[in-house]
Length: 468
Ligand SMILES: *[C@@H]1O[C@H](CO)[C@@H](O)[C@H](O)[C@H]1NC(C)=O
Ligand SMILES: *[C@@H]1O[C@H](CO)[C@@H](O)[C@H](O)[C@H]1NC(C)=O
Ligand SMILES: *[C@@H]1O[C@H](CO)[C@@H](O)[C@H](O)[C@H]1NC(C)=O
Ligand SMILES: *[C@@H]1O[C@H](CO)[C@@H](O)[C@H](O)[C@H]1NC(C)=O
Ligand SMILES: *[C@@H]1O[C@H](CO)[C@@H](O)[C@H](O)[C@H]1NC(C)=O
Image 1 (tube, rainbow, N blue to C red):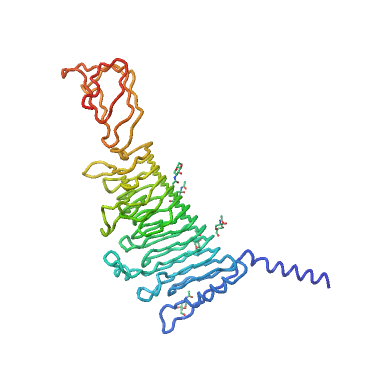
Image 2 (tube, protein in one colour):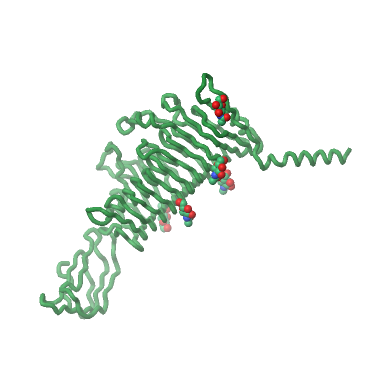
């Protein structure tokens, strides 16, 4: 008897063991639609979600292959254990925006421990909505639904699924902690309106890895309160690039800090690596943002800090931005620019950028108006490595330069040329014991200089710094 019950307990243990490894599965049933058409699985999905969410062990909601209609739905936690959402098929949102009561189509909310996977597609059917979007003219425009919302979701991974043709942003992440997108796909036409790929706000520890994004607005946009965000191995384009901001539109925005964009490829986009803050903005902070190893292919503004952001010209242009940008680096950015100004760092007149580092830039522009250039204002960046174009040439500070014991003959009359920027006059230039002769018919050697006052020691045969 004792042995029997012991074996019974063992059997029970063995039988129950697999369910702690393999999640219990709740399949979304394929209800046939009333009066034909594609069935709407909303009720079945909510039922499966409720059971999975109540499971005390890992559970899975499963949607098989096929095409299903789904009206707006909130998949709400908290759940008792980790929940998987596996979708093989294609979900279609109602195409008509007036069928939505809220601004989200599929909303995951207040869940700790979530996996979304399965190779399936969330099809927002956005074409009709893009045509109705009048937010560029109408400040009270109706907010169109986002395909996927993650509201207050933590410890989550979203991989191997596609979001297609969203009516508005494809993905909005709010209040997340430790959430990762991997092998994620965003797909919409380049002319679709306001279809940001992944937007993140007020979240800590979000990773976007090995993801491809083709869309009509920012591929990734980081709003206020984005902290410790990693974007790695992302391909972007068409789209508006990988952007921090726009910041400073609202009161009480939280700081942005810790943004690491590495090993990304941006193709045919209007921007590459961008930080943007509104003109006439509220107070804000954005710091510790690093863009490294980014390949640009025909990007219009490959490297851009824009503190004069004002689409549709609805701001008071004379009031500068009050968002403080600091500790930013752009390193190993290479490829091609489709416009002449390949590097533009336009910081706030009121609060200049601090701690901006630009290293190893090689951006080629081929056009009738000459090679690539840069434009900078209200910034004194630290420049190193290759610089094509020379970043902020007009405002780079050069100091502690010496020329000593330079002797011999010059092949042209102009033996010394020291022309420095008017904005940042050269400091500490020392000339000592130089002797350069010119033996041509145009007379003796000469020098030319501007915006500098050298220290001259030793003997010198040169007429130093006439014109300084
Ligand atoms: C769902 O049901 C409809 C109607 O019965 C059917 O046409 C369709 O093939 C089914 N889809 C799947 C994935 O089973
Ligand atoms: C994506 O999901 C599909 C369907 O479940 C699967 O066959 C495929 O192996 C998955 N791919 C990856 C990269 O996980
Ligand atoms: C982050 O979330 C993932 C997915 O749930 C989990 O595997 C991982 O352990 C979490 N990391 C931390 C530091 O909690
Ligand atoms: C960079 O990203 C590409 C995909 O865009 C990937 O194939 C490659 O392995 C990544 N390299 C490194 C060093 O992470
Ligand atoms: C910027 O970096 C410097 C040097 O590493 C550091 O001292 C400073 O605190 C940083 N600023 C911010 C706002 O994080």
